[in-house]
Length: 277
Image (cartoon, rainbow, N blue to C red):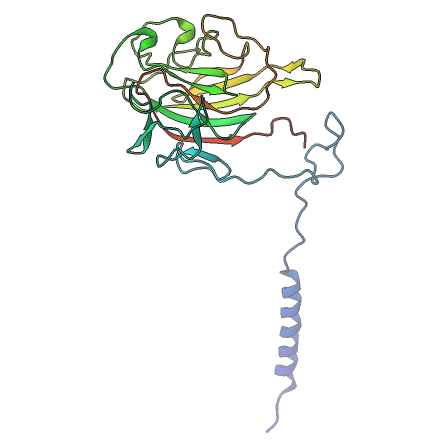
């Protein structure tokens, strides 16, 4: 039997064409993800869109506003007070823990008093949820009073300010004794509320001279009540705050003001605000 040379020739051409097409379909080399020939930014370390500049660390956010992101330190998850101690004597914290929250104990129950974190912090992002008592008792500063203290000394006020007249710099979300909030964003007594906070610790030089004041940004129930507001210094009562004490890090403290205030879903992220990458 004789075979035509044409089919074999055609088959060879197809192989060659297929090889050529395969080469054409090879993935092109990855395009650059930045530039190396753009102008330098002020300071001279990085160019605009610099390809060599380190990329941000990946952080997985929580599925809800309450859930801690992947790089957060969970200070209270509704189960125990392992991250907390008593402020006065560093004994184990004795606040009541039940139903996923902790609560200031009634007078005569337990040791009582402020509690603070075992860890110390400087620049942070803090998420904390709280509820003032549903049963309204007292008025002005005697109603749902507590507070969050940064460095153990710079207070952000907690108060039941729902239809409750009190002095402006003692209202909920005030920098106590100094700066009222931009607005009153409180919920009704007994309802859960949120503070989302960025706190910047003060900075000092080696001789103890103040280089930078403490600053705070606060969202109360999602509403801005302070935007990078400077503190006058460590909080006082019936006195003007000051920067007489050199401190750049300290515990987060929660106030026992003899009102059964509740807290839940507390987490913190340590910030590197002075990093210059």
